[in-house]
Image 1 (cartoon, rainbow, N blue to C red):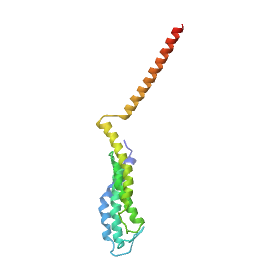
Image 2: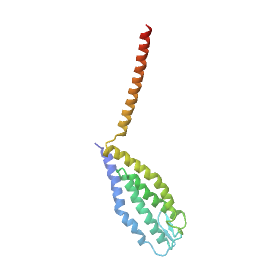
Image 3: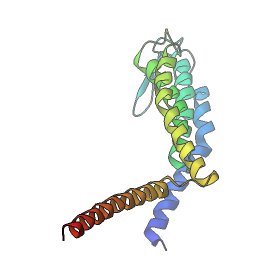
Length: 180
């Protein structure tokens, strides 16, 4: 049974995650409550400039268009218990590369070359997910337990080695009996 401290910590974390998910539409549409046609939006901890967009409000809209789904995908990835959860890394990578491209560079080229980075990430993730799937299907659908098969093969090798050793001993015994 979990201690009260662990239960409380878990409830707090799950509550914060739920609150973040519930407030995600508010975060997404928060750009509508910013002034139009300004070059800089000054918040308490940071400021957002137009960064090549028509104005700072448009830049904020684009940032939120990438950040909110990215956060939701990260939450999904972290909390998912399915075997295929690694596949969620592909859209996470896509949104991450797009967000980085627009924040790091001027917005003249938005969502153009990120596909090459996503393809590279996909080339790594897809085989990993496929091999996980194959192992699970072999074990749970076909009833093939690879560890049990490895153990059986090891036992068979040991038996074969013992049989060969016994044959050598029998041959030595036969040779000794002829000498006597």
